[in-house]
Amino acid sequence: MKLYISPTSPYSRICLARALQLGLDDLPMQLVDPWQNPPELEAVNPLSQIPVLLLNDGSVIAGTLSICQYLENQLPTPRYLSGTSQALALLDMLAQVVKLVRFKAPDSDDHPLVARGIAALQRALPRVPAFDGSSDKWPDVMLALVLLTIKLRRPDVYEAAARDDTKAAVEVFAARPLAEKTRPEALATTGAQTVGAL
Image 1 (spheres, rainbow, N blue to C red):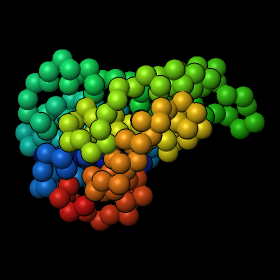
Image 2 (cartoon, rainbow, N blue to C red; image 1 turned 120 degrees about the vertical axis):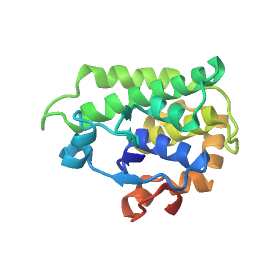
Image 3 (tube, rainbow, N blue to C red; image 1 turned 135 degrees about the horizontal axis):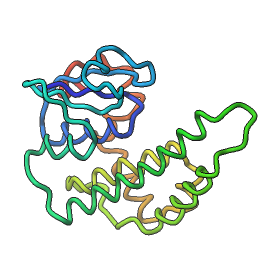
């Protein structure tokens, strides 16, 4: 197997964190920049999207939830799936806002979906489930990773809308080795070829 990831992708970070949490130290990984459409990524996923997991038999699993479920090798319970899908929905909304802002034409107004996405995040952040930042339960870890990404990419929205208990839990999680190893800055400078070498 080989996990294709990008250092700056929060979706990659979630899959990498899950592999680390499951102790898959021998899992090879390949750092790529999907915006450059690298041939090695396109050979595995012609959409040039990450994360993607190449299996030993040549099969490909794409998508954050699918990869995490495959790595865990068990069917999720409804509560587990509810927690992880809510976290991923938050991340998808943030990613939409970030892409629309990043790729807008110079000297143009923001796309109307930017304001809509920010408003949705402002509504959702106060309603995220309470969680323990020191928990090893995967839905809690995934939610913490998503909230760290929102804090990084839209600190204005995070600071204004997240509850104090959410902020405290995120700070606890951010200090954990799992969060440190998967930070975008840490991944960008690593020469690690496997998950365990991080």
